[in-house]
Length: 288
Image (tube, rainbow, N blue to C red; front, side, top):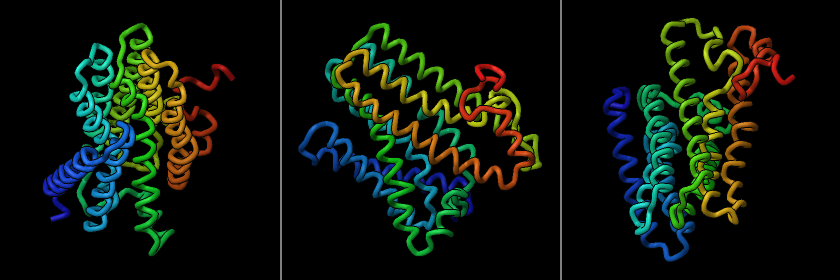
């Protein structure tokens, strides 16, 4: 059953439906500020997904949570607002487009519930019997906290939106981020289709001068959302902590982990690193 991709998709859809139910229930039962209510509901949904990942012995069940949670949480919050304007429409359009596209990209690479992400396999081998705890805290709770922090500017904006030039600047950054992610993911999928030698390095399109253009898009996305919020609530500049934590996570955790693995089987990876930039898709000959 777990080896069938369609059944696996159906199982994950049901799991996320159950997680959403418990998340909304806890949100409604929490008597506190909007931020604490969302955090409580988000945590409840994460714990639900975690319990199912134990049941099915596959931590990758959590993988789509990163992109699914915001496109459920933020539109539901917007429905509760009686005074939403064009700023809200732009922000929700950006986040929903980002989330749907990223979830679709996950679905394209998802095989079935018998296969777990290589990073989790590595952590499971290293942690042994402690892996359930590592999975809960490091693989599921930590990313949930990061994306919650990233959503804080959006949640705040939904309570008091605006529409001005800064709203458009933020939306433009979000659009650029989605475009970067979409193009880079498409280019990588096409490269993998026609290249059967896994030791080959992708050196075309956005990947020609940049090793992680998709991660750049992910980083820019939440800075764009933050700038949208600043268009109405500049006094809440401290909510930049969300996109900042997200940026640091990619720079010091996600990228080093990915590059360590790539270096283990990609031909001439050291030369590739010397010739390219980590995030900016521009030749190294520029701005030395």
